Image: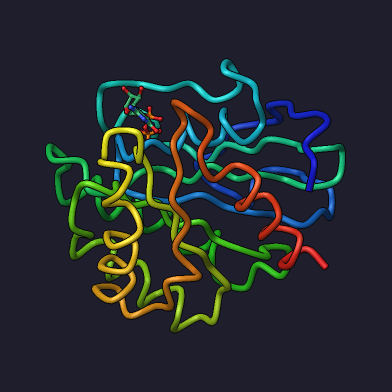
Amino acid sequence: MEIKSAKFITSATNISTINLDDYNQIAFVGRSNVGKSSLINMLTKNSKLCKTSATPGRTRLINYFLINNNIYFVDLPGYGFAKASKSEVANWQSMIEPYLINNSNLKCVCMLVDIRIEPTDQDKQMLKFLNYYQIPFIIIATKCDKFGKSKIKPQIQKIANYLGVGSSNVFPSSSDNGLGRIDILNKFDQFLE
Ligand code: GDP
């Protein structure tokens, strides 16, 4: 897909309270600070669309962006912030699970992992959850500009093995140099058909 327009629509803590058009959705999820906001900005070529932050855990809302006037990109709150209390984790679950379950407009979840860091237990749990509810997903390995060029491919294979998915489902990316942009957007087309 080519992105011609992207605009912020709304933020929500409770999805039942918002009114959206009946468009397909692609969601983004991952550990706080993994580079989710930066990736959405990179894909849309709009550096100001999604607020980025060097402080983990600040984006605790579901944010909707309208792409090309007919698709929503949905930025889900990050998980695994170090300082989260039990109630914050419960809060996160109560926000995200109703979004993911029984959402017929949801065509793909992009689960982000940092190429430099071994996927965490929470990443594995998220994947289990997506598999259990048969939600289509891809893995996006972020911050590849911080990783040796020649090491990216073997690391992608390592992440794929670790998570038990095919390596063609793991996409290297960099918000710094745009790596992965075309491949990821082309992949979205398959889910949106
Ligand atoms: P989020 O919490 O997952 O939304 O993460 P952000 O997009 O706010 O990014 C967290 C930090 O990582 C910020 O300081 C970003 O500038 C940085 N970052 C994100 N993506 C990349 C990337 O691809 N390359 C580099 N070098 N830094 C990145």
